[in-house]
Amino acid sequence: MKTLFLNFEYLVPFLLNQCGSLLYYFTLASTDLTLAVPICNSLAIVFTLIVGKVLGEDIGGKRAVIGMVLTMTGIALCITSSLSKTQRPPSTF
Image (tube, rainbow, N blue to C red; front, side):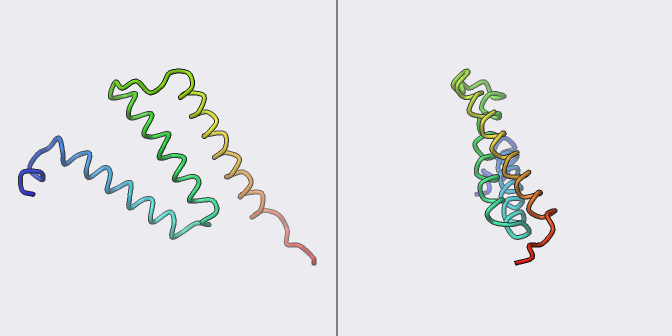
């Protein structure tokens, strides 16, 4: 354990991962689950592809980019749908 925590190349990605996990749990605790879970899971895939590309990995070419665009479009639709529900006046039923 001591060797791992003294290794800078291991410690930085580990701490970033833990910060992402904390952000995920705080987001789940403070927002609607029907919105937070799909967004977090979708963004995990997008960030994995982006970091893979930055690190020089082959991410799958055009199909991966199209998938990321479709994922981001779906997230935008979820967010706008959620916003329109909260801004709508209450039903009179």
